Length: 159
Image 1: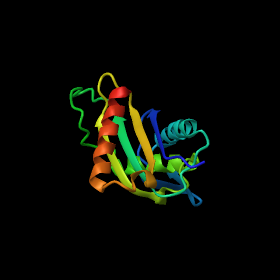
Image 2 (image 1 turned 135 degrees about the vertical axis):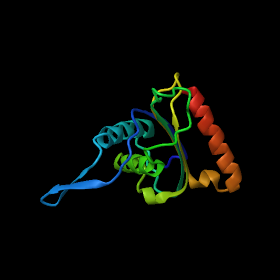
Image 3 (image 1 turned 60 degrees about the vertical axis):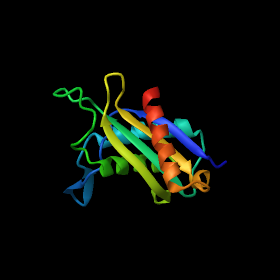
Image 4 (image 1 turned 120 degrees about the vertical axis):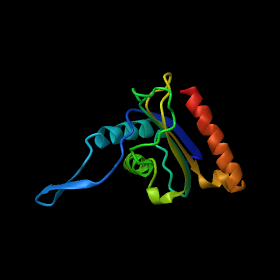
């Protein structure tokens, strides 16, 4: 069974997959201890939402990361500091692939990703939406991006 699209929310603390450090005898470990729990949260949410479905062809992916509020400025929602967005995407994609929901992250042909501080009524985590390319084949790129942005905003309000 090939899914047309899959949407889910991952509750947890988004963590970037950064550099690895050498600890001796050729052993490399993640430099951040937060990556492993984040990947486990993503794997669990993806596996549960997919219910055995696997994307094996080109996909369009939307990721909306909600990071914890800043104690120093709880009204600021645009996230302007670390973690880097590309490293958040990397750790999330690796977990989705290891969950078996996406055969390979090389299948992602288009990506819309953003990061924000969670509002007081939001939980930290990530909104994930994966769309089979054929679902967008007859639409223009601009139309699909506008629809994706609207869907992300609606998902953000719903959680």
